[in-house]
Amino acid sequence: MYKVLKLNKIAAEGINKFPSDNYIVGDDISDPDAIVLRSFNMHSIEIPSSLKAVGRAGSGVNNIPIKKLSAMAIPVFNAPGANSNAVKELVIAAILICARNIHQAIELVEESKNPADFKKRIENGKSKYVGYELPGKTIGVIGLGSIGVKVANACLNLGMNVIGFDPMMTVNNAWELQPGIEYSDNLGDLLKKADVITIHIPSSNETKNFIGKD
Image (cartoon, rainbow, N blue to C red; front, side, top):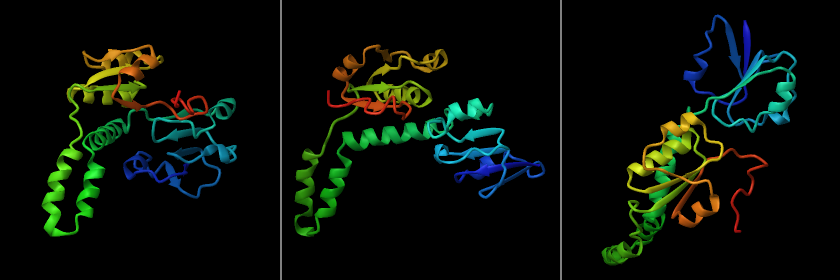
């Protein structure tokens, strides 16, 4: 029997991939053969000598001590693209909420307690919080991995002008981009042109403060 330690809650669909006749999976496993996790910080724990593999339910691996595990000949597996569509939808939702001033409009409605002036306040607020439509606006997509590519394609389909930036883009991801998406190798130029910026790069010491006031 192989023992698998969960460091985070993992969806049942994932746990069911481990047949019960060959695997024991739990939150309190000693001497595990494998570890599965999402966001748990493995840098803070001692690596068990029994460990043979680590599986990350997601794309990022910055919470896993890759160099240390590599020195111990322990492979690390991740799942790039597994949640990319869900993240894409959240990005589109955030863009629409900001573009159409949804938060401010909700506050206006909630503050309109008096039925007598409710209609008047709402009518006045329509022009104040109308925002802007997305077609014709330019979005800069920084990072063209699984998520960035889906965001770029979705924004193009919404009628936006899309500029992508990723010096490390793979050939496969490049093939996934729809025709009409502009590619830029100059981040400063992209920032000058874009009305909206969305960033999809790993969080690490190297990318900290990736974009600042300068």
